[in-house]
Image 1: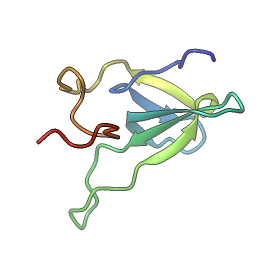
Image 2: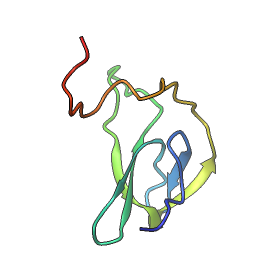
Image 3: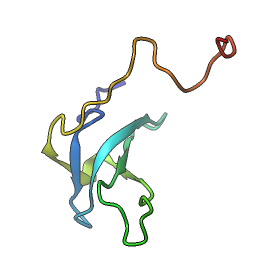
Length: 87
C-alpha cells in the first residue's frame, strides 16, 4: 500500500471545482485509490455546516499543510471499540 500524499488537518483544493476544505478522513481502497474526506470551512447562509466531500487524491492540491491541528488524546476517543465502551 502506498502512502497518502496529504494528512488530516491539511487544507486542500479540488482542481476541478475549486472547492476547498480540511482533510478529516483518508480512505484507502483495495483498488489502490486514496480518497480524502474534506470538510469546507464556511458555514452555509442558513447557519448549517455543509456536507463534507469525498475526492480522489489526483484531483486535489495542497493549499496549506497543517491548517488545522486536531487535538486527539492518545488512543483516540471515538470510532470502533472492539472491547466495548470503557465505563
